[in-house]
Length: 585
Image (cartoon, rainbow, N blue to C red; front, side, top):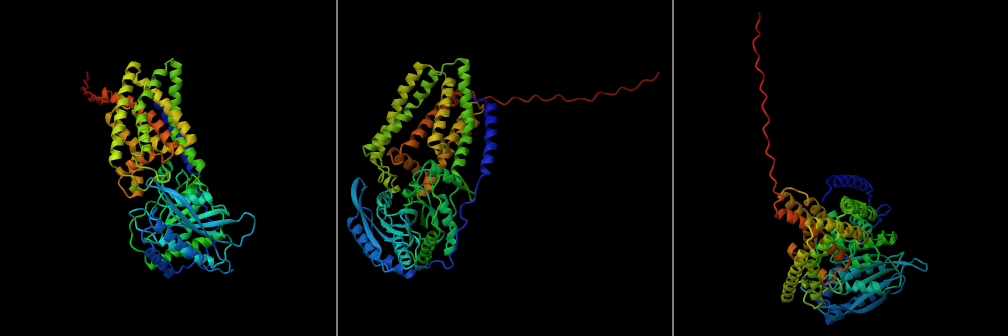
Protein backbone atom coordinates (compact mmCIF):
# COMPACT_ATOMS: atom_id res chain seq x y z
CA UNK A 1 0.00 0.00 0.00
CA UNK A 2 2.87 2.37 0.77
CA UNK A 3 4.54 3.88 -2.26
CA UNK A 4 7.96 4.04 -0.64
CA UNK A 5 9.63 5.98 -3.43
CA UNK A 6 6.94 8.67 -3.45
CA UNK A 7 6.98 8.81 0.36
CA UNK A 8 10.75 9.34 0.49
CA UNK A 9 10.59 12.00 -2.21
CA UNK A 10 7.88 13.88 -0.33
CA UNK A 11 9.97 13.77 2.84
CA UNK A 12 12.97 15.14 0.95
CA UNK A 13 10.93 18.08 -0.34
CA UNK A 14 9.47 18.68 3.13
CA UNK A 15 12.88 18.56 4.81
CA UNK A 16 14.32 21.19 2.46
CA UNK A 17 11.28 23.43 2.94
CA UNK A 18 11.43 23.03 6.74
CA UNK A 19 15.08 24.09 6.77
CA UNK A 20 14.21 27.16 4.70
CA UNK A 21 11.31 27.96 7.06
CA UNK A 22 13.61 27.77 10.10
CA UNK A 23 15.79 30.44 8.51
CA UNK A 24 12.96 32.92 9.20
CA UNK A 25 13.55 32.79 12.98
CA UNK A 26 13.56 36.32 14.39
CA UNK A 27 14.86 37.73 17.67
CA UNK A 28 12.14 38.80 20.13
CA UNK A 29 10.91 42.39 20.00
CA UNK A 30 12.87 43.70 22.98
CA UNK A 31 14.65 46.55 21.19
CA UNK A 32 13.85 50.12 22.07
CA UNK A 33 13.31 49.53 25.78
CA UNK A 34 14.65 52.35 27.92
CA UNK A 35 16.20 51.26 31.16
CA UNK A 36 15.09 53.56 33.99
CA UNK A 37 17.79 55.67 35.55
CA UNK A 38 16.52 54.76 39.03
CA UNK A 39 14.77 51.38 39.30
CA UNK A 40 11.72 51.27 41.52
CA UNK A 41 12.23 50.53 45.19
CA UNK A 42 9.50 48.90 47.27
CA UNK A 43 9.16 49.11 51.06
CA UNK A 44 9.77 45.61 52.44
CA UNK A 45 8.49 46.48 55.93
CA UNK A 46 5.17 47.73 54.55
CA UNK A 47 4.75 44.58 52.45
CA UNK A 48 5.60 42.30 55.36
CA UNK A 49 3.21 44.14 57.69
CA UNK A 50 0.37 43.86 55.16
CA UNK A 51 1.12 40.16 54.77
CA UNK A 52 0.88 39.57 58.51
CA UNK A 53 -2.28 41.67 58.89
CA UNK A 54 -4.13 39.78 56.16
CA UNK A 55 -3.01 36.41 57.51
CA UNK A 56 -4.25 37.34 60.99
CA UNK A 57 -7.58 38.60 59.62
CA UNK A 58 -8.38 35.64 57.35
CA UNK A 59 -5.85 32.81 57.60
CA UNK A 60 -7.97 30.52 55.39
CA UNK A 61 -9.51 32.12 52.30
CA UNK A 62 -10.89 29.23 50.31
CA UNK A 63 -13.21 30.29 47.51
CA UNK A 64 -16.76 30.00 48.75
CA UNK A 65 -16.10 30.74 52.46
CA UNK A 66 -18.43 33.74 53.08
CA UNK A 67 -16.86 35.08 56.28
CA UNK A 68 -13.27 35.06 55.03
CA UNK A 69 -14.39 36.34 51.63
CA UNK A 70 -16.18 39.36 53.07
CA UNK A 71 -13.51 40.15 55.67
CA UNK A 72 -10.63 40.04 53.19
CA UNK A 73 -12.57 42.08 50.58
CA UNK A 74 -13.39 44.78 53.16
CA UNK A 75 -9.77 44.91 54.31
CA UNK A 76 -8.44 45.33 50.76
CA UNK A 77 -11.05 48.03 50.04
CA UNK A 78 -9.92 49.98 53.12
CA UNK A 79 -6.28 49.72 52.03
CA UNK A 80 -7.15 51.00 48.56
CA UNK A 81 -9.17 53.88 50.00
CA UNK A 82 -6.24 54.99 52.18
CA UNK A 83 -3.77 55.28 49.29
CA UNK A 84 -1.96 58.64 49.16
CA UNK A 85 -2.09 60.90 46.11
CA UNK A 86 0.16 63.61 44.76
CA UNK A 87 -2.68 65.48 43.08
CA UNK A 88 -5.07 65.14 45.99
CA UNK A 89 -7.49 62.97 43.97
CA UNK A 90 -8.38 59.83 45.85
CA UNK A 91 -8.47 56.58 43.86
CA UNK A 92 -11.84 55.22 42.84
CA UNK A 93 -12.52 51.99 44.71
CA UNK A 94 -15.10 49.61 43.28
CA UNK A 95 -16.41 46.11 43.95
CA UNK A 96 -17.68 43.38 41.66
CA UNK A 97 -19.98 40.80 43.23
CA UNK A 98 -20.49 37.59 41.25
CA UNK A 99 -21.19 33.90 41.75
CA UNK A 100 -19.24 30.82 40.68
CA UNK A 101 -19.98 27.14 41.07
CA UNK A 102 -17.84 25.45 43.74
CA UNK A 103 -18.36 21.70 44.26
CA UNK A 104 -21.71 21.91 42.50
CA UNK A 105 -23.05 24.92 44.44
CA UNK A 106 -23.10 28.62 43.56
CA UNK A 107 -20.95 30.67 45.92
CA UNK A 108 -20.76 34.45 46.29
CA UNK A 109 -17.40 36.07 45.49
CA UNK A 110 -16.10 39.63 45.41
CA UNK A 111 -13.52 41.43 43.28
CA UNK A 112 -12.13 44.71 44.64
CA UNK A 113 -10.28 47.18 42.44
CA UNK A 114 -8.90 50.72 42.57
CA UNK A 115 -8.44 53.05 39.60
CA UNK A 116 -5.56 55.53 39.56
CA UNK A 117 -6.07 58.09 36.77
CA UNK A 118 -3.19 58.91 34.47
CA UNK A 119 -2.08 62.06 32.70
CA UNK A 120 -2.74 60.91 29.11
CA UNK A 121 -5.58 62.81 27.50
CA UNK A 122 -7.77 61.73 24.64
CA UNK A 123 -11.09 60.05 24.21
CA UNK A 124 -9.70 56.50 24.33
CA UNK A 125 -6.99 56.26 26.98
CA UNK A 126 -5.20 52.97 27.42
CA UNK A 127 -4.54 51.63 30.86
CA UNK A 128 -2.49 49.01 32.68
CA UNK A 129 -3.98 46.36 34.95
CA UNK A 130 -2.16 44.86 37.94
CA UNK A 131 -3.92 41.86 39.43
CA UNK A 132 -3.41 39.49 42.36
CA UNK A 133 -5.54 36.54 43.55
CA UNK A 134 -6.90 36.82 47.07
CA UNK A 135 -8.26 33.29 47.54
CA UNK A 136 -6.51 29.95 47.88
CA UNK A 137 -7.29 26.38 46.89
CA UNK A 138 -8.57 23.93 49.53
CA UNK A 139 -5.65 22.26 51.24
CA UNK A 140 -3.20 24.93 50.06
CA UNK A 141 -1.72 27.70 52.20
CA UNK A 142 -3.36 31.09 51.93
CA UNK A 143 -1.12 33.32 49.82
CA UNK A 144 -0.94 36.74 51.46
CA UNK A 145 2.19 38.00 49.74
CA UNK A 146 0.46 38.53 46.37
CA UNK A 147 -2.16 40.86 47.86
CA UNK A 148 0.50 42.67 49.90
CA UNK A 149 2.63 43.22 46.79
CA UNK A 150 -0.44 44.49 44.92
CA UNK A 151 -1.07 47.07 47.65
CA UNK A 152 2.58 48.13 47.68
CA UNK A 153 2.58 48.60 43.89
CA UNK A 154 -0.59 50.69 44.20
CA UNK A 155 0.96 52.79 46.97
CA UNK A 156 4.13 53.35 44.92
CA UNK A 157 2.25 54.38 41.76
CA UNK A 158 -0.16 56.60 43.73
CA UNK A 159 2.77 58.80 44.74
CA UNK A 160 4.45 58.82 41.29
CA UNK A 161 3.70 60.57 38.03
CA UNK A 162 1.86 58.32 35.58
CA UNK A 163 1.36 58.71 31.86
CA UNK A 164 -1.54 56.25 31.74
CA UNK A 165 -4.30 55.12 34.08
CA UNK A 166 -3.60 52.08 36.24
CA UNK A 167 -6.02 49.59 37.69
CA UNK A 168 -5.19 47.42 40.71
CA UNK A 169 -7.47 44.39 41.08
CA UNK A 170 -7.78 41.93 43.96
CA UNK A 171 -9.65 38.93 42.55
CA UNK A 172 -11.51 36.06 44.13
CA UNK A 173 -12.19 32.68 42.56
CA UNK A 174 -8.72 32.28 41.12
CA UNK A 175 -8.69 28.64 42.24
CA UNK A 176 -12.10 28.10 40.59
CA UNK A 177 -11.13 28.38 36.95
CA UNK A 178 -9.91 32.00 37.26
CA UNK A 179 -13.53 33.02 37.82
CA UNK A 180 -12.66 36.45 39.24
CA UNK A 181 -10.37 37.43 36.35
CA UNK A 182 -12.90 36.22 33.78
CA UNK A 183 -15.73 38.14 35.45
CA UNK A 184 -13.66 41.31 35.68
CA UNK A 185 -12.71 41.14 32.00
CA UNK A 186 -16.31 40.64 30.93
CA UNK A 187 -17.62 43.60 32.97
CA UNK A 188 -14.90 46.27 33.00
CA UNK A 189 -15.17 48.92 30.28
CA UNK A 190 -13.82 52.18 31.77
CA UNK A 191 -10.81 52.21 29.45
CA UNK A 192 -9.03 49.98 26.97
CA UNK A 193 -6.59 47.58 28.63
CA UNK A 194 -3.15 47.58 27.01
CA UNK A 195 -1.27 45.19 29.32
CA UNK A 196 -1.92 43.01 32.37
CA UNK A 197 0.50 41.91 35.09
CA UNK A 198 -0.63 39.21 37.52
CA UNK A 199 1.26 38.73 40.80
CA UNK A 200 0.84 35.14 41.99
CA UNK A 201 3.22 34.12 44.75
CA UNK A 202 6.14 35.97 43.22
CA UNK A 203 7.75 36.42 46.67
CA UNK A 204 7.15 32.91 48.03
CA UNK A 205 10.45 31.23 47.12
CA UNK A 206 14.07 32.04 46.45
CA UNK A 207 15.26 31.58 42.92
CA UNK A 208 14.25 32.89 39.51
CA UNK A 209 11.00 34.58 38.56
CA UNK A 210 8.79 32.49 36.28
CA UNK A 211 6.78 34.24 33.58
CA UNK A 212 3.51 32.57 32.57
CA UNK A 213 2.05 33.68 29.28
CA UNK A 214 -0.18 30.80 28.24
CA UNK A 215 -3.93 30.52 27.79
CA UNK A 216 -6.57 27.84 27.34
CA UNK A 217 -6.36 28.28 23.59
CA UNK A 218 -3.35 27.70 21.29
CA UNK A 219 -1.89 31.14 21.91
CA UNK A 220 0.54 32.81 24.28
CA UNK A 221 1.82 36.28 25.13
CA UNK A 222 5.14 35.48 23.50
CA UNK A 223 6.46 38.97 22.81
CA UNK A 224 5.28 40.46 26.11
CA UNK A 225 6.80 37.56 28.07
CA UNK A 226 10.12 38.06 26.28
CA UNK A 227 10.11 41.75 27.21
CA UNK A 228 9.37 40.92 30.84
CA UNK A 229 12.19 38.35 30.97
CA UNK A 230 14.57 40.87 29.41
CA UNK A 231 13.77 43.55 32.00
CA UNK A 232 13.73 41.40 35.16
CA UNK A 233 17.50 41.75 35.75
CA UNK A 234 17.06 45.54 35.86
CA UNK A 235 15.32 45.14 39.22
CA UNK A 236 17.79 42.60 40.60
CA UNK A 237 15.80 39.45 39.73
CA UNK A 238 16.70 36.46 37.61
CA UNK A 239 14.37 35.27 34.88
CA UNK A 240 13.57 31.58 34.66
CA UNK A 241 14.32 29.96 31.29
CA UNK A 242 11.63 29.96 28.65
CA UNK A 243 9.67 26.72 28.11
CA UNK A 244 11.19 24.20 25.74
CA UNK A 245 9.90 23.89 22.18
CA UNK A 246 8.31 20.51 22.96
CA UNK A 247 6.46 21.91 25.97
CA UNK A 248 5.22 24.88 23.96
CA UNK A 249 3.86 22.62 21.21
CA UNK A 250 2.24 20.28 23.73
CA UNK A 251 0.60 23.26 25.48
CA UNK A 252 -0.75 24.36 22.10
CA UNK A 253 -2.05 20.87 21.37
CA UNK A 254 -3.69 20.56 24.83
CA UNK A 255 -3.82 24.06 26.36
CA UNK A 256 -3.34 24.06 30.12
CA UNK A 257 -2.61 26.93 32.51
CA UNK A 258 -3.54 27.95 36.05
CA UNK A 259 -2.75 31.66 35.90
CA UNK A 260 -5.17 34.58 35.87
CA UNK A 261 -3.51 35.84 32.70
CA UNK A 262 -5.35 33.17 30.68
CA UNK A 263 -8.64 35.02 29.96
CA UNK A 264 -6.78 38.19 28.93
CA UNK A 265 -4.45 36.32 26.57
CA UNK A 266 -7.45 34.58 25.02
CA UNK A 267 -9.01 38.02 24.47
CA UNK A 268 -5.88 39.22 22.64
CA UNK A 269 -4.57 41.39 25.51
CA UNK A 270 -0.85 41.13 26.42
CA UNK A 271 -0.81 39.54 29.88
CA UNK A 272 1.67 37.60 32.01
CA UNK A 273 1.76 36.14 35.49
CA UNK A 274 4.87 36.61 37.63
CA UNK A 275 5.48 33.80 40.09
CA UNK A 276 8.24 32.04 41.98
CA UNK A 277 7.07 28.64 40.68
CA UNK A 278 6.40 27.22 37.20
CA UNK A 279 2.88 27.39 35.82
CA UNK A 280 0.84 25.11 38.07
CA UNK A 281 -1.24 24.91 41.25
CA UNK A 282 -0.01 26.53 44.45
CA UNK A 283 2.13 24.32 46.68
CA UNK A 284 3.06 24.59 50.38
CA UNK A 285 5.89 27.04 51.04
CA UNK A 286 7.47 28.73 54.02
CA UNK A 287 6.37 32.19 55.11
CA UNK A 288 7.99 34.88 52.92
CA UNK A 289 10.76 36.94 54.44
CA UNK A 290 11.56 40.62 54.02
CA UNK A 291 14.37 40.06 51.51
CA UNK A 292 12.24 38.06 49.09
CA UNK A 293 9.35 40.50 49.43
CA UNK A 294 11.71 43.42 48.76
CA UNK A 295 12.98 41.82 45.57
CA UNK A 296 9.46 40.91 44.42
CA UNK A 297 8.23 44.43 45.14
CA UNK A 298 11.09 45.94 43.14
CA UNK A 299 10.20 43.68 40.22
CA UNK A 300 6.56 44.80 40.30
CA UNK A 301 7.12 48.55 40.52
CA UNK A 302 10.01 48.59 38.01
CA UNK A 303 8.01 46.61 35.48
CA UNK A 304 5.04 48.92 35.93
CA UNK A 305 7.19 51.98 35.26
CA UNK A 306 8.67 50.39 32.13
CA UNK A 307 5.26 49.49 30.72
CA UNK A 308 4.00 52.99 31.49
CA UNK A 309 6.87 54.43 29.41
CA UNK A 310 6.59 51.88 26.58
CA UNK A 311 2.89 51.18 26.43
CA UNK A 312 2.69 49.40 23.06
CA UNK A 313 3.21 45.70 23.80
CA UNK A 314 3.14 42.81 21.31
CA UNK A 315 -0.22 41.09 21.19
CA UNK A 316 -0.58 37.37 21.95
CA UNK A 317 -0.09 34.98 19.06
CA UNK A 318 0.47 31.32 18.25
CA UNK A 319 4.22 31.53 17.71
CA UNK A 320 6.90 29.65 19.64
CA UNK A 321 10.37 30.41 20.94
CA UNK A 322 13.24 28.30 19.63
CA UNK A 323 16.78 28.89 20.93
CA UNK A 324 15.92 32.42 22.01
CA UNK A 325 14.34 33.34 18.68
CA UNK A 326 10.72 33.58 17.64
CA UNK A 327 9.03 31.40 15.03
CA UNK A 328 6.04 33.32 13.71
CA UNK A 329 2.56 31.73 13.70
CA UNK A 330 2.26 31.60 9.92
CA UNK A 331 5.64 29.90 9.53
CA UNK A 332 4.83 27.44 12.32
CA UNK A 333 1.60 26.53 10.58
CA UNK A 334 3.50 25.92 7.34
CA UNK A 335 6.03 23.74 9.17
CA UNK A 336 3.20 21.58 10.53
CA UNK A 337 1.83 21.25 7.00
CA UNK A 338 5.26 20.21 5.73
CA UNK A 339 5.44 17.44 8.33
CA UNK A 340 2.04 16.23 7.14
CA UNK A 341 2.84 16.61 3.43
CA UNK A 342 4.25 13.06 2.89
CA UNK A 343 1.11 11.63 4.46
CA UNK A 344 -1.16 13.71 2.22
CA UNK A 345 0.82 12.79 -0.90
CA UNK A 346 0.67 9.05 -0.16
CA UNK A 347 -3.05 9.26 0.65
CA UNK A 348 -3.71 11.02 -2.66
CA UNK A 349 -1.62 8.42 -4.47
CA UNK A 350 -3.58 5.57 -2.83
CA UNK A 351 -6.87 7.18 -3.81
CA UNK A 352 -5.80 7.67 -7.44
CA UNK A 353 -4.48 4.10 -7.73
CA UNK A 354 -7.72 2.67 -6.36
CA UNK A 355 -9.71 4.74 -8.84
CA UNK A 356 -7.52 3.67 -11.78
CA UNK A 357 -7.74 0.00 -10.86
CA UNK A 358 -11.51 0.14 -10.43
CA UNK A 359 -11.43 -1.17 -6.85
CA UNK A 360 -14.56 -0.39 -4.87
CA UNK A 361 -13.78 1.75 -1.84
CA UNK A 362 -17.20 1.32 -0.23
CA UNK A 363 -16.48 -1.92 1.69
CA UNK A 364 -13.16 -0.60 2.95
CA UNK A 365 -14.70 2.68 4.08
CA UNK A 366 -17.51 0.87 5.89
CA UNK A 367 -15.01 -1.45 7.55
CA UNK A 368 -12.89 1.51 8.67
CA UNK A 369 -15.96 3.20 10.16
CA UNK A 370 -17.01 -0.01 11.92
CA UNK A 371 -13.56 -0.31 13.48
CA UNK A 372 -14.02 3.11 15.06
CA UNK A 373 -17.39 2.33 16.66
CA UNK A 374 -16.01 1.01 20.01
CA UNK A 375 -13.78 4.07 20.47
CA UNK A 376 -16.62 6.46 19.62
CA UNK A 377 -19.00 4.63 21.98
CA UNK A 378 -16.44 4.82 24.80
CA UNK A 379 -15.99 8.58 24.34
CA UNK A 380 -19.72 9.31 24.28
CA UNK A 381 -20.30 7.04 27.28
CA UNK A 382 -17.72 8.89 29.35
CA UNK A 383 -19.22 12.24 28.40
CA UNK A 384 -22.75 11.09 29.23
CA UNK A 385 -21.63 9.70 32.61
CA UNK A 386 -19.90 13.01 33.29
CA UNK A 387 -23.19 14.82 32.66
CA UNK A 388 -24.69 12.53 35.32
CA UNK A 389 -22.00 13.79 37.77
CA UNK A 390 -20.31 10.40 37.99
CA UNK A 391 -17.07 11.93 36.67
CA UNK A 392 -15.08 14.94 37.93
CA UNK A 393 -16.81 18.21 37.06
CA UNK A 394 -15.26 21.32 35.46
CA UNK A 395 -14.43 24.32 37.63
CA UNK A 396 -16.45 27.21 36.20
CA UNK A 397 -16.26 25.56 32.80
CA UNK A 398 -12.48 24.94 32.75
CA UNK A 399 -10.26 22.09 34.02
CA UNK A 400 -10.28 21.99 37.84
CA UNK A 401 -7.34 21.75 40.20
CA UNK A 402 -5.77 18.29 40.60
CA UNK A 403 -7.48 17.73 43.96
CA UNK A 404 -10.83 17.99 42.18
CA UNK A 405 -10.04 15.01 39.95
CA UNK A 406 -10.06 11.83 42.01
CA UNK A 407 -10.90 8.20 41.41
CA UNK A 408 -13.72 7.15 43.70
CA UNK A 409 -16.78 4.95 43.42
CA UNK A 410 -18.42 7.12 40.76
CA UNK A 411 -15.33 7.13 38.59
CA UNK A 412 -14.93 3.35 38.99
CA UNK A 413 -18.53 2.78 37.91
CA UNK A 414 -17.99 5.09 34.93
CA UNK A 415 -14.89 3.21 33.79
CA UNK A 416 -16.55 -0.21 34.17
CA UNK A 417 -19.68 0.89 32.29
CA UNK A 418 -17.59 2.49 29.55
CA UNK A 419 -15.48 -0.63 29.07
CA UNK A 420 -18.59 -2.82 29.00
CA UNK A 421 -20.26 -0.65 26.37
CA UNK A 422 -17.06 -0.52 24.32
CA UNK A 423 -16.78 -4.33 24.47
CA UNK A 424 -20.40 -4.71 23.37
CA UNK A 425 -19.83 -2.25 20.52
CA UNK A 426 -16.72 -4.18 19.46
CA UNK A 427 -18.66 -7.49 19.40
CA UNK A 428 -21.46 -6.02 17.31
CA UNK A 429 -19.11 -4.25 14.90
CA UNK A 430 -16.99 -7.40 14.59
CA UNK A 431 -20.04 -9.43 13.55
CA UNK A 432 -21.00 -6.74 11.06
CA UNK A 433 -17.48 -6.75 9.61
CA UNK A 434 -17.58 -10.51 9.11
CA UNK A 435 -20.71 -10.13 7.05
CA UNK A 436 -19.12 -7.25 5.16
CA UNK A 437 -16.05 -9.29 4.19
CA UNK A 438 -13.73 -6.37 3.44
CA UNK A 439 -10.07 -7.25 2.92
CA UNK A 440 -7.59 -5.80 5.46
CA UNK A 441 -5.66 -4.09 2.65
CA UNK A 442 -8.83 -2.39 1.41
CA UNK A 443 -9.65 -1.27 4.95
CA UNK A 444 -6.13 0.08 5.46
CA UNK A 445 -6.31 2.00 2.17
CA UNK A 446 -9.62 3.51 3.23
CA UNK A 447 -8.11 4.41 6.60
CA UNK A 448 -5.19 6.11 4.85
CA UNK A 449 -7.54 8.17 2.69
CA UNK A 450 -9.65 9.12 5.72
CA UNK A 451 -6.51 10.00 7.64
CA UNK A 452 -5.32 12.30 4.87
CA UNK A 453 -8.68 14.06 4.56
CA UNK A 454 -9.24 14.49 8.32
CA UNK A 455 -5.67 15.68 8.95
CA UNK A 456 -6.01 18.25 6.15
CA UNK A 457 -9.25 19.59 7.65
CA UNK A 458 -7.68 19.57 11.12
CA UNK A 459 -4.76 21.62 9.80
CA UNK A 460 -7.20 24.31 8.70
CA UNK A 461 -9.31 24.25 11.90
CA UNK A 462 -7.00 23.30 14.78
CA UNK A 463 -3.52 22.54 13.42
CA UNK A 464 -1.82 21.77 16.72
CA UNK A 465 -3.77 18.55 17.19
CA UNK A 466 -1.38 17.21 14.53
CA UNK A 467 1.44 17.49 17.08
CA UNK A 468 -0.07 14.51 18.90
CA UNK A 469 -1.28 12.47 15.93
CA UNK A 470 1.25 12.94 13.11
CA UNK A 471 3.98 10.71 14.63
CA UNK A 472 1.47 7.88 15.07
CA UNK A 473 0.15 8.40 11.53
CA UNK A 474 3.61 8.22 9.97
CA UNK A 475 4.57 5.27 12.17
CA UNK A 476 1.53 3.17 11.24
CA UNK A 477 1.95 4.07 7.56
CA UNK A 478 5.55 2.82 7.52
CA UNK A 479 4.60 -0.22 9.62
CA UNK A 480 2.24 -1.46 6.89
CA UNK A 481 5.25 -2.40 4.76
CA UNK A 482 7.96 -3.47 7.23
CA UNK A 483 9.16 -7.08 7.22
CA UNK A 484 10.51 -7.40 10.75
CA UNK A 485 8.43 -7.64 13.89
CA UNK A 486 10.84 -5.58 15.92
CA UNK A 487 10.54 -2.82 13.31
CA UNK A 488 6.77 -2.73 13.91
CA UNK A 489 7.26 -2.67 17.69
CA UNK A 490 9.69 0.25 17.48
CA UNK A 491 7.36 2.16 15.17
CA UNK A 492 4.50 1.59 17.62
CA UNK A 493 6.58 3.05 20.44
CA UNK A 494 7.51 6.03 18.27
CA UNK A 495 3.83 6.67 17.57
CA UNK A 496 3.06 6.70 21.31
CA UNK A 497 5.89 9.09 22.18
CA UNK A 498 3.81 12.31 21.89
CA UNK A 499 1.14 10.94 24.25
CA UNK A 500 3.81 9.86 26.73
CA UNK A 501 5.47 13.28 26.50
CA UNK A 502 2.08 14.96 27.04
CA UNK A 503 1.45 12.91 30.20
CA UNK A 504 4.92 13.71 31.53
CA UNK A 505 4.49 17.43 30.76
CA UNK A 506 1.05 17.69 32.36
CA UNK A 507 2.15 15.56 35.32
CA UNK A 508 5.10 17.87 35.94
CA UNK A 509 2.81 20.89 35.76
CA UNK A 510 0.34 19.34 38.21
CA UNK A 511 3.04 18.04 40.55
CA UNK A 512 1.82 14.46 40.01
CA UNK A 513 2.95 11.32 38.19
CA UNK A 514 2.26 10.66 34.48
CA UNK A 515 -0.42 8.06 35.26
CA UNK A 516 -2.46 10.60 37.21
CA UNK A 517 -1.88 13.09 34.38
CA UNK A 518 -3.34 10.59 31.89
CA UNK A 519 -6.46 10.16 34.05
CA UNK A 520 -6.67 13.93 34.56
CA UNK A 521 -6.64 14.51 30.80
CA UNK A 522 -9.28 11.83 30.19
CA UNK A 523 -11.57 13.05 32.99
CA UNK A 524 -11.36 16.75 32.12
CA UNK A 525 -11.87 16.09 28.41
CA UNK A 526 -14.86 13.82 29.05
CA UNK A 527 -16.42 16.49 31.26
CA UNK A 528 -16.26 19.09 28.49
CA UNK A 529 -13.73 21.30 30.28
CA UNK A 530 -11.46 21.36 27.21
CA UNK A 531 -14.04 22.22 24.59
CA UNK A 532 -15.16 20.06 21.70
CA UNK A 533 -13.13 21.03 18.62
CA UNK A 534 -9.76 19.43 19.27
CA UNK A 535 -11.17 16.35 21.08
CA UNK A 536 -13.41 15.63 18.07
CA UNK A 537 -10.53 15.91 15.60
CA UNK A 538 -8.28 13.83 17.88
CA UNK A 539 -11.00 11.16 17.96
CA UNK A 540 -11.42 11.16 14.16
CA UNK A 541 -7.68 10.95 13.57
CA UNK A 542 -7.35 8.14 16.13
CA UNK A 543 -10.10 6.17 14.37
CA UNK A 544 -8.35 6.51 11.00
CA UNK A 545 -5.02 5.45 12.50
CA UNK A 546 -6.73 2.46 14.15
CA UNK A 547 -8.09 1.31 10.79
CA UNK A 548 -4.58 1.31 9.33
CA UNK A 549 -3.17 -0.42 12.40
CA UNK A 550 -5.46 -3.40 11.74
CA UNK A 551 -3.44 -4.26 8.62
CA UNK A 552 -0.24 -4.13 10.67
CA UNK A 553 -1.79 -6.42 13.28
CA UNK A 554 -2.98 -8.90 10.61
CA UNK A 555 0.48 -9.04 9.03
CA UNK A 556 2.00 -9.46 12.48
CA UNK A 557 -0.37 -12.31 13.41
CA UNK A 558 -0.03 -14.17 10.10
CA UNK A 559 3.73 -14.22 10.36
CA UNK A 560 4.34 -11.96 7.38
CA UNK A 561 6.97 -10.09 9.38
CA UNK A 562 9.05 -13.13 10.18
CA UNK A 563 11.09 -13.32 7.02
CA UNK A 564 14.55 -14.56 7.85
CA UNK A 565 17.70 -12.98 6.65
CA UNK A 566 18.92 -14.42 3.43
CA UNK A 567 21.73 -16.83 3.93
CA UNK A 568 24.85 -15.42 2.51
CA UNK A 569 26.34 -17.78 -0.03
CA UNK A 570 30.09 -17.89 0.44
CA UNK A 571 31.94 -16.46 -2.46
CA UNK A 572 34.11 -18.97 -4.28
CA UNK A 573 37.73 -18.67 -3.46
CA UNK A 574 39.91 -17.88 -6.42
CA UNK A 575 42.81 -20.28 -6.71
CA UNK A 576 45.82 -19.10 -8.59
CA UNK A 577 46.58 -21.11 -11.68
CA UNK A 578 49.60 -23.30 -11.36
CA UNK A 579 52.43 -22.34 -13.61
CA UNK A 580 53.68 -25.22 -15.72
CA UNK A 581 57.39 -25.43 -16.39
CA UNK A 582 58.40 -24.35 -19.80
CA UNK A 583 59.71 -27.17 -21.93
CA UNK A 584 62.35 -26.28 -24.40
CA UNK A 585 62.85 -28.43 -27.44
